[in-house]
Image (cartoon, helix red, strand yellow):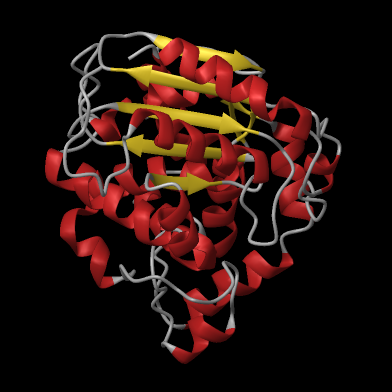
Length: 313
């Protein structure tokens, strides 16, 4: 299978659709991103990365960062994390306050905002916010094999200045006794976490551990245990696109996590990690062009997680 040709042809077939959808304008710094950007990167176990378009331009990964925070929180907390956050699809908006109040401060899953705030709190542990951010970036740089991975201070500041809903969620969580650290400390890490900037190439390489039982197949570095990688993949499939997760599984068939910066991370267990980026979003907050690209790659490779027999590369 010529994966390079599949990636290149997918990009070329969809390139005329650049600019479709609506960028996330409620975060002012994201509203300034060129809506015509479009990149694809597909990383495999032998160290090859097949790229097309703007695959080497860094972008704000936003909620995709929740995948990495979850892996690291599980490393610190183990199964005890599930006492504080659930594992079920939400069925409501990603920033719903009503659901959090109705269910006594236990978020449905780690990928809606309230669940991600709890996960970030557990990842911080007894450290300072800056120490937790440094640890997160160190791990990502190691997994991406690139020391340039960082976060965009302007995006983080923009998120903090417009983060009233997230503050409300955090104070609800505090009121129910779900946070161990002060609200502003947790949000300081959370906003910087969401402002992490990676290119499609970096993101695909940093995510290979998800497709290969928690370990980078290129370097042998372990990000998490095999059982935890499988559970993260399951959550990505069920909850990775909020109330559009079922439709994404139906149309694409990959474990995935979207971000309002226009990125989507897809894990294909045993095969590859794929990252796409196009800032224009659909109504559910998932990249329109990115989802189409992943659907075409899935169709051409036969790599749906629901396939019985996967083709050899």
